[in-house]
Length: 422
Image (tube, rainbow, N blue to C red; front, side, top):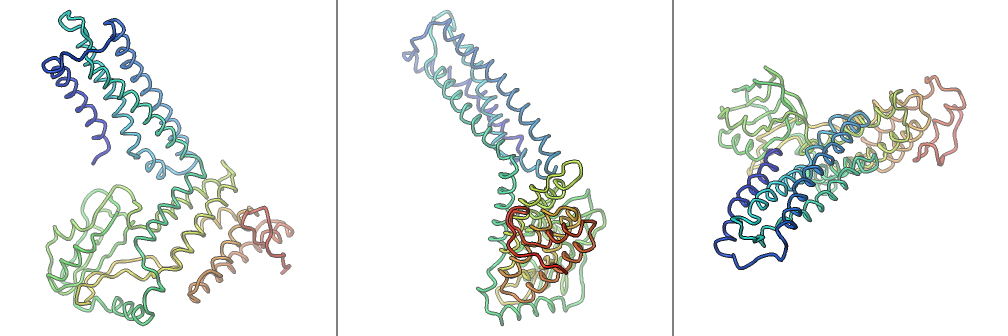
């Protein structure tokens, strides 16, 4: 559902209720009246309507200011995630519904000079006010999520969920089966290319692949689909989208199986949460902000995500049908890709921060020790050597370079290994 439809549904429901419920009360429930004077009921409903509208303006003006501040402090991509939270749109809807229904109920007070106050409509306005206050409290709680610690935890949780859903545990698969699957995936596109699809339209990002549909289509056409672009890639006019080997498949169905959005999403993209964390870290390391402690906090989350990725089979960019024949091949990032994305920019922008360098070194040492795959651990150790080389050639003083080569999970808090002079 488009988010703007949420408040519209509340408005429509309140308008329909305001037109029908008072009439039902008058026709069938006339014996139920509220023991309030006409003046008191009118004052009550008028205050509910006017107060709700004033509250709506104040709340959403404050939310807009906080979101704008977060765009400057964190990342504009992250802010879009927050402002698309459905809680804000439900709050706007219930505020508008309270205002509209209170106006309709006000029109039935002393209608026809009967001196009656509708019982159920008046009570319903009170219930809507209570619901508005509850959603107001919930909205305020959501705004506190913009604090840096909460932001980092939210992104980390999204990344952990994506990793859990997308990857199988490497130790759950027999090594022989894993190696066989890798060889099959490498040899999958053996038939000649019989069909090519290119993208046409405005720039859009691949948000997800419908793997089951692509495999089913390829099986029906006795073909293999090879994606030219990965999830997270931005498509522009004329970009090669996919190739079909060994048959011809319906283009409309193939295109429908590749979901495009205006921006990246978390759904099938484990790189995206790491990208957001790195964005926050390098913005914190900019001379305008100069907040290395925030960068250290982001490394905490990044290290956790990398440890989880290191326990999974990352070479899973293929899908087979029920007969074991590979029908879909799609690009997936390697362990080196994840490592480069996670640390390269932080290392470059934090080259003069002893705090960041110490935390980076601690993350790399602990990450290498936690990996059961010797090949991946060796890649991390090579990256650690690159970090040490960068420290030696940094503009830091000799004593600062010595401190930067220490391991400290707090950045500047507790050295875990005595510094060794080169």
